[in-house]
Length: 295
Image 1 (cartoon, rainbow, N blue to C red):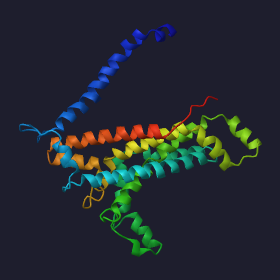
Image 2: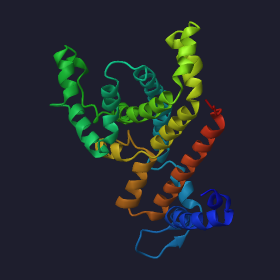
Image 3: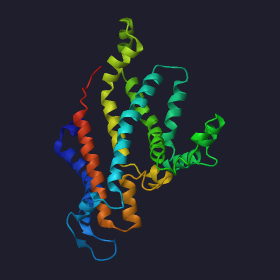
Image 4: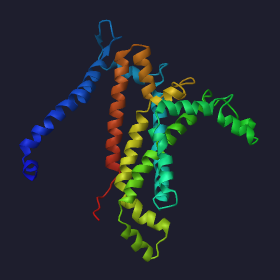
C-alpha cells in the first residue's frame, strides 16, 4: 500500500477519472449557465446574444425585486452565523458535559435535520395558520389575543417567521458537529484544568472553544452557504410572498426561469448566486484564522 501511495503517477491515474466526472457534472454546467446568461432566450425560440445586459437588468429597479432578495439572504446569513451557530455551540457545550439523558437530548435536537424540509414547512404552516394554528391558539390561551395575526400573510412578520424556521431547523446539525469536536478533546485536559481550579465557563472559553475553532469555522461556512442558497423551505412556506417580503435570490431565479421562461436572466441570477457563495466562502476562510492542534 505504501508503494502505491508513493507512486504519484499511479495516484494521478486514479484521481483523473473522478476529476473528469466532477468537471462534467459541475464545472461544465456552470460554464454553460454562464454562456446562457449572455443570451436573450425563452427556451424554445432563437436566442440573441446580448452580452452583460441580463446582469445590468438583474440589479436594475424592476418588479422582480432581486436587490431585496439579496438583502433578505444577507439577513438570513447574518442570523445563521451569529445566532444559529452560537446557539448550537451553547447546546453542544452543555450536552457534552455528560448530563443525564445526553443521548436523548442529542438525538432530539438533531431530529429536525433528518425530516424532509417539505414536511418541516407543512408542520410550521399549521403552527402559523391564522385560524386554527397552534401559535395563535397559545397566545389566546395565555391572554395575549391582541398579538394574534396571520403570521405568514403579513409583510411585517412573514420574513421573521420564515427565517426563524430555517435557523431552528439546522441548529441540531451544527450542534452535532460541534459536539463531536468537543468529544474528541482528551478528557485529561479538562481534568487538569479542574485541578487548577478552573470553572466550567473558564474551561469553555480558554480550552474547549479554542480547540474546536476549526469545526466552528466549518459550521460558519456551512451556515453561510446554506443561507445563501436556501430555497425549499421558503417556497413551501410563502413562495416569496406576501408582496415579495420573503424573496431570496433563489426563489426569484426559480420564478424567472420556470414561470417566465426567461432563461438568460435566470442563468445570470444563477451565476450571481454561485459567485456569491464562492466569494463569501473565501472571505470566511481568510477571516477565520484557526490553528491545528495535536494531542
